[in-house]
Image (cartoon, rainbow, N blue to C red; front, top):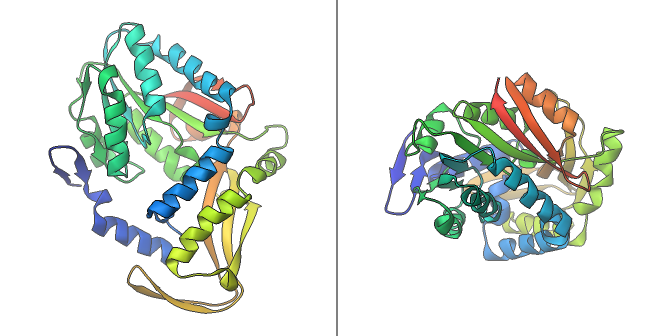
Length: 327
């Protein structure tokens, strides 16, 4: 694996235009819409923001924000010296800033690095956290999940003797479970990992996942996902979005929300320079979001050689934060 370094960022080859295009084409051949295509235009980004404002507990629920603040303050008390903080999939860096602020208040001296597949997001997170870290390392733009080669690049620049904490907030819903936990295991080779997961009621797992369906099957999410389909050349006359609870994944038994575009007529269209022939019986997997229980999360971690050190569950029991180390 190689990387290009400029004055502002480190661009890993996995996030190069050629690599992203190849990955998108491969996904479309599998009849899947790559997640990255949902955020390409300003219009799509605005529609996603509307979804976030209307349905995100982080935005709508002060108890959720307080849950993150108190949990991160508890985690910060484990670190009182020089340390490294790597944020994978940093987004805007709001939660990173909460942790760094808590670390400063307990006397820690954190070095910070932001990572995301978006250049604009890593720059925003780095700027937000600049005054809260002893040093902000050059951010990394790379695809996920990480492998051993990417791990070396991500951790380059952190003090070798200092403890490391890697944040993986908001990633578990949008990766296939086996890929996600393999990525956690890879990163945990360098130190502790703090990750989050969206949770479903444990008593009846399938019913618990079904109970959150309205957070996805709603006008805001439909408008956002149909904007992606329109950008690819589809119209409402070509088919419809169908939201359902997924079957358990074949390796770990994880369920989630599965969104598919079911075609009602045949279509020929060119997407990303490649010709696709679709018939009325075809479906395209447009979006998915996996839900866990605390018990299922522990099982998945253990199956990948990871030890769960501590768990925090939100008051609404819909979010969990997990501190993980290599066994």
